[in-house]
Amino acid sequence: MNADRFPGWVYPVAALAGAVVLWGAFVSLFDVPAYLLPHPIEVGRRLAADPGLYVDAAVATTVKVLVGGAAGTLAGFLLGVAVGELPALWRAIAPYLIAARVLPVVAIAPLLLIYFGTGFATGIAFVSLMALFPMAVSTAAGFRRTPEAALDLAASVDAPRHRVLLGVRLPYAVPDVVGGLRQSATLAVVGSVLAEWFVADSGLGYLILVAAENVRPDVLLAALSLVFLVGFALYGAVDLLGSRLRRYAV
Image (cartoon, rainbow, N blue to C red; front, side, top):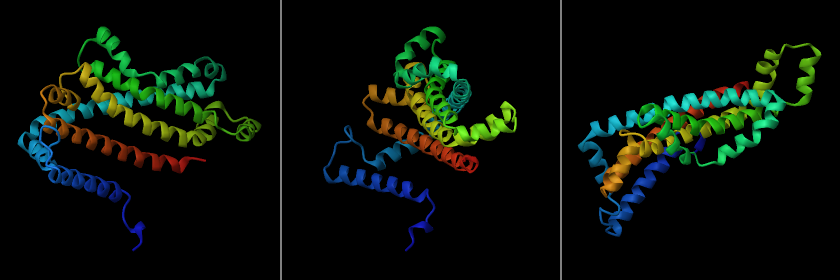
């Protein structure tokens, strides 16, 4: 049987199904108490018992992921283009961009709480910061990867700067831009959950926090499963977008 006959999404879905089966078998075989690790069927029952609660929480988290992630990714892309295009700007702020990328953004949460208080806007700002730095660093690196021969050829025909940017530099930068987009999308989901721990009173992150405080592993795992689905769907959308963008890569 030729493995290529199956669509690409079949393999991760099959892996997920296998993991759930192993989880259920482990709980049943070793008689694990529900307060330590509930059976996946129990988690499914918890989701079915109050679907409105989980749908509302998933929608609140998804909105933060999409709005904050889009804002941070766009800002990171524009900053990366500027840094990649201007050598002086690259030398001036590139070390700080790289340092900010490894800085735990969660450490900034208390400052956001002081400046903006709790609520939706603070959560969006937190998610945007999570998504901004990987996109900026990857984009800048991609724009600086353009071969000198390609730039010399553009200069020989007096190509205007905006045409060099769009027609030469951007196609060479596409693989790095797609890589940054993937990282930003993943971190947007993480950032949304973290933001809901600190500054929000709704969403899957907030639900996870409340479940942990009340020792409700069934609720916690039900919320976690929805976080996973949100991340999986977003990553799939970004992967599809990346495959289309790569058509324009050199």
